[in-house]
Image (spheres, rainbow, N blue to C red):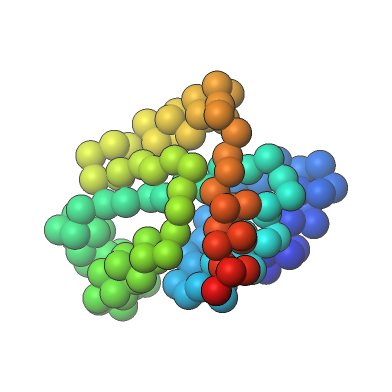
Length: 120
């Protein structure tokens, strides 16, 4: 999956890619695929109570999955930017991300993650 998205980027497409990388090997594959590109790795956070409520109101979610994934997904990650959707809307978070893309600095997280994981 990461390699397919990276091929689209290499072909000139601008991509917003949403994923949950739950392990070092997956994070390593992601970091390796995107390290050559100008990219921004964004961590998305949310308070536990809000996360539980959002999961509860979505009919297609298994209860407890979000909480179980929330600690694992951020355990090894290193982000260029972090947003918190607890009180910020999706539009507000998108504006923060767009602002960072316009004004910099350039993202370095994927390169740093790749080098860190290679040393393990």
